[in-house]
Length: 157
Image (spheres, rainbow, N blue to C red):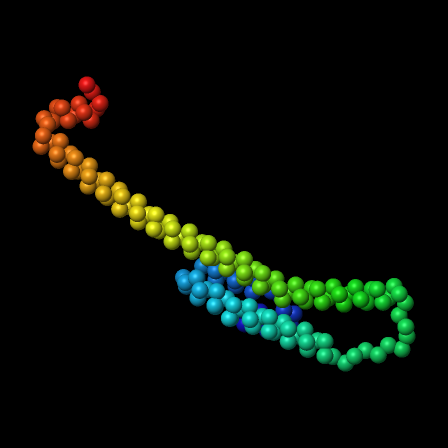
C-alpha cells in the first residue's frame, strides 16, 4: 500500500484492492480487519489526497489581463467544477467501498458463525439419534425374537 501512496497521481484502485483483499482473505477478527483497513489504508489515503489537493491549489495565482467571454468563462467553470467533483469522488469512493465491504464482512462472519453453530447442533442431534436407535435395538433384541424384529423392520404383518 505504501508504494501506491508514493505515486505522483494518487489513484484509489490499489486501496480498493487492499480493502477487498484484507476483508476477504485475512484471518483476523471482524473488528481487527476494520481497524487495519481504516488505519493503514483509508486514513493515510485521505490525508495524502487532501494534502496534495491543498498543495496544488496553493500555487501562484494566475493574473489575467483580459476579460473572458461568456463561453470561455463557462468552459473554465465547468472544468473547475468537474475537477472538484472528481477530487471529491476520489476521496469519498474508498470510504463508501470500505463501508460496503464492512457490511459484507459483518454479514459473512455472522453467517459463518450460524453455519458453525448449526453444524454443531446437527452433529449433536445425529449423535443422540444414533444412541437412541442403539437403545431401541437393545430393548427390542432383549424382548422379542430376531424373526419378529426382522419382520417389524421390513414392515411385514
